[in-house]
Length: 243
Image (tube, rainbow, N blue to C red; front, side, top):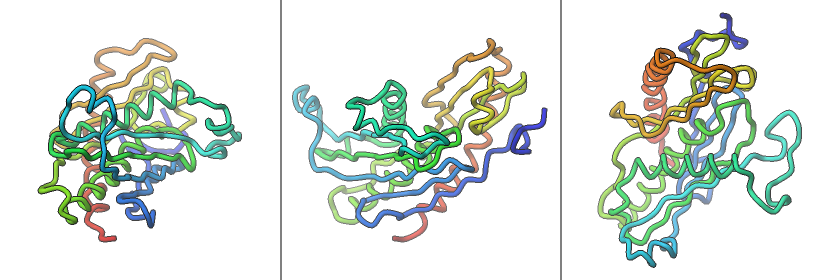
């Protein structure tokens, strides 16, 4: 099978992570994965959600919000603020981003601190949730590093890197990093979130056109694991750049 982009089955799109793109946020990163572009920012608040206090929980919290700009796609969409509510897809994705970021941090070390991650899709061509996670991690670490530098945290609570990538089965063939054309025609669509120890944090998989086999799932998981190494390297390079 020849992919529309001409890429090999195991090849992800060109990815760039540009740090410190926002003047005001404690952390920020513009992630570009092919024609998918997402602006990720991290903001620090010195409080925790009311439910944590009510339950007597100590530590801090990390949460995320996700949204697509009206012309992120070929056809304009209305802002969800105009609609008066978020749709199910938006809620699902921002919860995934939040869970992924919390898996990277020891929250017990962040007493009375909340970090809010905002992921705004400037341009979408498939894989917006995975791109968001990859950029959000950079913004999150920047924000935490600033807290350590300012003496608000004794040491960094970061446990390790977290990254994500999509895979799918297109015309019976497992491929990595689907763009919109492939995603809309895939028989199977999966998303993998992993840490730098090679451990799985989350798998989202759906047989959209036809059932997929355990062998295909294993192949996609191996593809994802190999690509993660490149993403981890790019995250490290972005975090090495000073503001």
